[in-house]
Image (cartoon, rainbow, N blue to C red):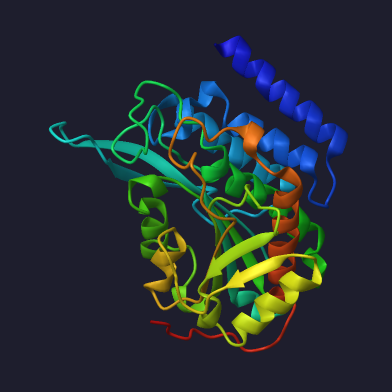
Length: 318
């Protein structure tokens, strides 16, 4: 197994060396998802060797891209209470969030932050959150949420290439233990490396790899920041997408933890599918061209908000 894992990593490095550039590429998205969904990562459940392996991978990518770390390093450790089947004793696992940032250039606005996040964990070998009766088989989680994690890495690469234009700073977070009840994002907002009042927008990507033929990109929370609904509609249409924009409808992924702290949010996804939370959520079903477009969309959202001097503030939505 160790030799097999080494081959996967070497193939990934070779691919990134061939295709590495500041623009989001299909080749790099594929390489990241291929690693994350490898059977050797055993479905990316919290705790254990495979979890450490995935965290190390993301941390090393952050470092290689030139993201800065906060004083306590890239990794934010926490204990996750795991969901278990009825009648099974409660379990805890040590896991991590992975955090890096790009500092803005404006002497005042660099103290304000936009957060881009995605959870990297999945369901391991099945369990109480799965939609399938299968146990003891790898739940690959290609769309949920290797797609969001790969997008996080690719968008980070692009934003680093634009760092001289940034006024506000941008934080990138790969959350652990989302599937156990948003545990990573809850821990982050309660132990944030910056003042929560300085986080002006949190964008979350959860399942962004299955864009349909109509090019729908769904989002909730666009009304939580000024002019957000019109801004997201116009920007999406300008790059050939069909944005389905909700002012509220904040939803149920990691951005909810931020919304509950009165932080503006966008929860982004490309829609549900029958393979959700089953072992059949595999890399061959990812629409990589569509995912690349989602990355472009979100990259432009970040760039426009991080280079603007317009005031950003929280607007409550029902």
